[in-house]
Picture (cartoon, rainbow, N blue to C red):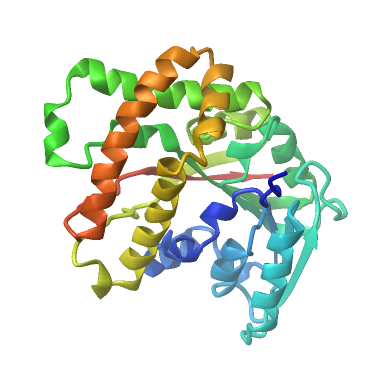
Length: 302
């Protein structure tokens, strides 16, 4: 029997460390007035990335509390905290986003990054984040629209794809996301509607911005640790597809999204051919990708 991997472990590698540009974080810190914040809570914290990044701009004696349902993620976050010498105080614990073990009105700012897209009931989690935040405090959600990437053109030759071929790619991706949602595993492009969920939860002065980060892959890869990490992650994903490891997962979500196995298998065959070609271009260093994406930062006041 295959051992169950911790949730989102495939996205916890080195490439995740390059999701945000430092100068953008400085701008965000000013917008959020982090210099006046003493207590931050990170819900669904993973390895604690956002807590570590945002803590740099907080008060010298700031306290950062991270919670995640995966004990492996929390163990890693604790190791990283032990190696941190900033003077900030970090605490990481295993906990459910629907039941955060903190008292009411606890934090100055409560954040989550790519959490709501994985939840069956994101509004319930938002309300729990509101509960633990002080009146006048901030709720901040960093959430994407991952479907947008389907419509990007990552190779000049893709301009020759027919409308029907591009629509098929879009249908596959949408059925995959709809399938995940039907199975209670969230919707990967929830970012677009987080402002609506904030308002429905009673938050005030809801504002939002977009990350300006492009997750680009530009040759020569070895000249940049960031691009090297991104190439390594992409190779891992493609290896899983080409080896057949991911077939059952993709089929499961596609069927749950209302598709047929016959249509999926026809598409999958063509997809593997394209993936093999992409892998070859990555390996010979000729693949170029602009890396455009939609990543929202949504803010509300309790």
